[in-house]
Image (cartoon, rainbow, N blue to C red; front, top):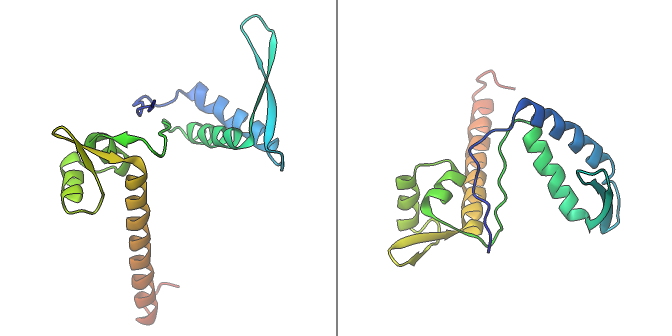
Length: 154
């Protein structure tokens, strides 16, 4: 199994501009119900090569280009990948000790490989979605209370 680890290098201004433009062009051609698309790739000698690929892969490419076009570094992790505690902490943007506390409290499942903890990427994503939903619900309650108390928010 191959896992692409996050690169810490942000895209250059030239890469950002190119990603924005190529993302727009690709996006315009993905308004299709077809399951596959064909694109042309040119090698360093100028010869063209047709490449057929699933539309889902091209949509993912558009998502990647959009992120790069916004100046973000991008990494791709398979859903079934297993992460170290540091990698999982990086996904959640928390410290490794805080993540270990979450694991030990049973909030995110994990298993051990020798003495090391491993966390499935899907479990990290599930936790993030669950916690985001709880935060959103809490904000809705606060908003409702502010409106009931006529605190000037409308």
